[in-house]
Image (cartoon, rainbow, N blue to C red):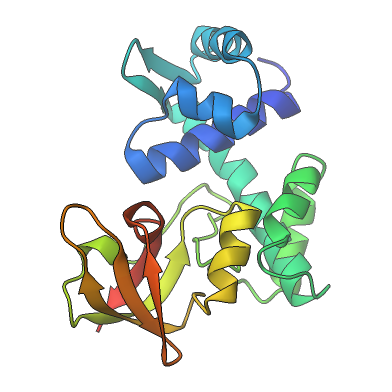
Length: 219
């Protein structure tokens, strides 16, 4: 592919995010997140596979090839640097920065990304705590655990929120659940029930699905 289109970049970015969370990107998740018809996803995945950007295993899902991963890292790098710029310099709320960055990430060059990175003082993470890839496509993940892995009585410092959807981030923000905050698990309901946590002296019940998106460094 001589030129990578915005659509291809968007697909590879979403596949990377899903692969990071779940090990594989299911086509049903791509339909939901990208808000496109199933047939459109199927056709695009076939095109990506033809260009050696992904590998698709029927009934299992999609994974990036090395070539696809490299492109995805470039997009993720620009996206997270833009999020940092929007939040730190322009005062955009951390839960709104993701959507704004999505509109801009395809339009800046790597040279501009490097200038943004320097102006920001070479940040390591985006406002949501997710690592910013280097200009060489390397990404350094801090060792963390999700909230659902913690036992009752365990506590930790929130390192990142792996899902950057605006509604979820705004909800977590209203609970005080943000990177660098301390969080303690005070109860875990049986039969896959909610997890009760304490942040800033207040208790909140989180579903297992939401709790799995909050990563912490255990204390």
